[in-house]
Image (cartoon, rainbow, N blue to C red; front, side, top):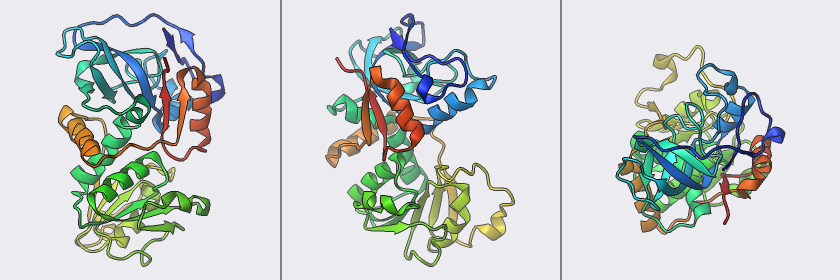
Length: 317
């Protein structure tokens, strides 16, 4: 089969396909014929630095999510040809991931899919929608009468969160730090240019999804109304930790702070996501699609940041 295999630091321009053996099934693992996958910032981080860490299996096929069909169910309850999605659990780091024609994956991180979405739309779902879903419902406890602030909304996760919130009936305020991207937030009730300070500029916010991260978190906490909940999920701002954070002084009285970690998907949650997509007749959005044979160009697009939204790769016929 063809796969994108990396052994060390690999800029996008050096990503290519090579011939490797199709993995052999073993107990507890299922062989998935990959039909598509979404690309993620974490795969860029892997190629450009994390690959050198001791805990990364080398050489490794990147890719933390995929959609496809069961090629060999091994000893699992899956059936050959069954539609599935897979994500996280060590994909693309502890074992080979989705940048390949076949992927051998632990059965407990592979989930059956009840959906007739085409492969390209399906490929936009697993990691992005699971993270948006968990952030909004598990962490923010989003309800139809909420006023939701999405800070850093011009990314795949932001667009998915906006689709969910608007379908539910929420009022959405979405922000970007680039003026040229304001038109991309046309689905929001209000689009704001984020200059680093939203406190005093937004009013009535009951829930906030902060995708910028620690760089903006203190301001997000003071921008929401008393009783509001802030979920910090993304790190678009490039700051990964908040030194000198004082919870007593920096979290206003009556405001709640939480965060979502997307490493624990379940069949129940994936069922809920696809039921929601079906009930509200939503087609997941993506920013660009590439054929698998053009994986180099897809990685270049990922690293450049020029694509607005999710990049998906499909295998073709």
